[in-house]
Length: 414
Image (cartoon, rainbow, N blue to C red; front, side, top):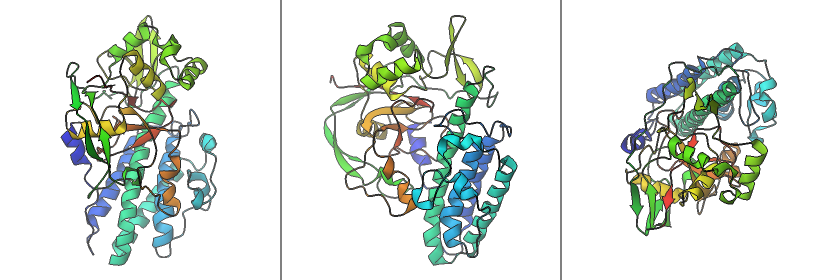
């Protein structure tokens, strides 16, 4: 995806709603819900139950949780006469919203075989119909309240659409037969500028979201930050470059690693990125299309922050800050800023100056995670259309690598 296309895709999914004109909002809701089912369609009922590690969730759970989100935050408070579909579903499918009530333990989601996938489909259909009825019957005052919440729910479910693919890929990677999620899947094409950089002279820049367009609360308030001088690589780091790091003993050289990073290398036995497999002396990688021979010119993927940081040290460079990444991306000169891999930055996931989480359960969406995690920018091949923007702040713990995570480098020798 080009920079201009990515920015265009960040336009609101739902145009401003006027009295009696809920059609565009309903259409956006339907399209998003259909995309979830499209992503689940290649999976059997057995596939949809599996939880391959505590950080991942079953596909069935993602489908049900996103449905509970609409039921909990829209239908229960705003739909006249609505009664929850099933009394147990709030406990089973709440994720981390403490204010919304008790919940089933995250690590045990894969142990719940019932309700089954067909029951979840019925739940989705019930809630979808109720949402559409609520929107059609809502007066202007109610629409002003629920339309923004619908948009939150749409973007929330898009996040889970991405997680559906990352989580099932992790599950399939544990299978010795290396099954394909989609046998026809092909990796997105990347672009190379042959080592060119985007040079950012020292200056004060606006950072964060401002103006119209959907955004999460962690993208605001917009503020000013000092950036530069720095050079940001136009290209993502490739598998070929990563192989050189490995061949030079990168995973065994403790001097390259943060202390916790080398502890993870030692404890987990990391010698290559997640999903790389050496077969008869040749590297392969597990993908959504199954096991493929490694393409040396493709961007490296499924590396942790610890690995990205060690690679940057080995290269004699650094990871960019998220502010540097944003300014460089706004210039339109970064290749593959969107649509291939999320890119690690060296910025801690913390609140912007003046940030305040919203009151109530929805205020738990982002704010309470602002510690001990690192920011990734851009988007990945699994990110749904319309869910990318230059101010988006993704965040994970530094040891995580099952997401579609890669990197580009920064150089302060300018």
